[in-house]
Image 1 (tube, helix red, strand yellow):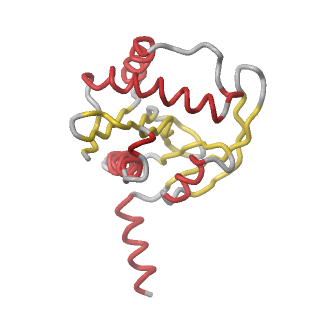
Image 2 (image 1 turned 135 degrees about the vertical axis):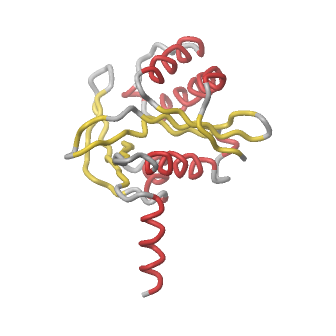
Length: 180
């Protein structure tokens, strides 16, 4: 399995995966989604616009086929400093529990840590969801509760998670704690 930063050539495949991700999210959280489903070409155009706006896109591929992706927003100011948001991390259901999601998240964190002033990474997940469980396993720290409101005006309670330390710093901290 290879994990890397996406290229423009990957956008169409990521758009097709986004259709599947949206359908899955619609099943799990119908209140946050519009009834109108966007097509792959429409999603591809949005992804290209997002990339032009400074968003980052990462992919994981297996046997030459893209099986997952992570999308990160451009740099924002909030919570007392610079931050980016993990907008979406998706791995095809048949490829889950093989480390692809963790590898994508680790690549995002390493990429952000390379910046001169690394921003904090944040993500939102519905309370008690599989996404929240994944973020907790990925050592994200629950920062605060936050509601998201869908097109129908129905609100979903969730949690904002964050990572503050660089991946290498976190690993050193873990080794130091284990050595004690």
